[in-house]
Amino acid sequence: MTKTIVLTAFAIISVVLSFFYEVIPAKSATPESTAPVAFHITPYAINSGEDMVRALELNEPLAEEEAAGLFFKKLNLRFNKPNEQQLAETVTQWLGTPYRYGRSSKKGADCSGFVTSIYRDLYGIKLRRSSHSMFQEVERIQKDSIRTGDLVFFRRSPKQPVFHVGIYLKNGKFIHSASSGGVKISSLKEPFYRNHYYAAGRVN
Image: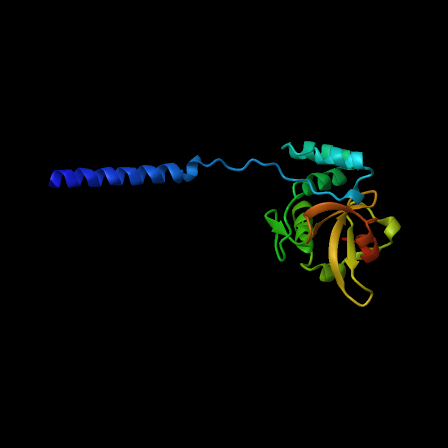
């Protein structure tokens, strides 16, 4: 009788253990995600619908230099100078980073966090943390004199302070971390950014 009870208990334990091993796999057996970074762009940043489709097709993992070259070529942006190419390669690594207020890493960043990280890592320059305070330390330049790497600032009304900042690329395009979409490329011609554009600044 006792032997039967013991064997029955072992059988029940075996069934329970086999259930957990099947339902809950070991963490080491779970493959890491290899999904490529999504490149976020806005329709106004593209010259045509066809260009947008081609740009979005760039979703395979590539070497940094190759990814930057192909992506910006598809956006009809040409960076010929070494410092421009370095900027293009660097910001490409950030495309698709989600917006996170108060953060400044590739896991999440707000607008000023993104800009300060790029300037720190690429140029070794430490900028002030908020877009408003950042605007206070740049050399203001005319809109028709903006160069690749300059900063573009936005405000909601003449009586309100600067609330957003991005890095100018070329041909009216700039890259920034927006509350909708995270790090992406937009155009100064978009109604929202055209209406709220305030000034451009150069970091010396």
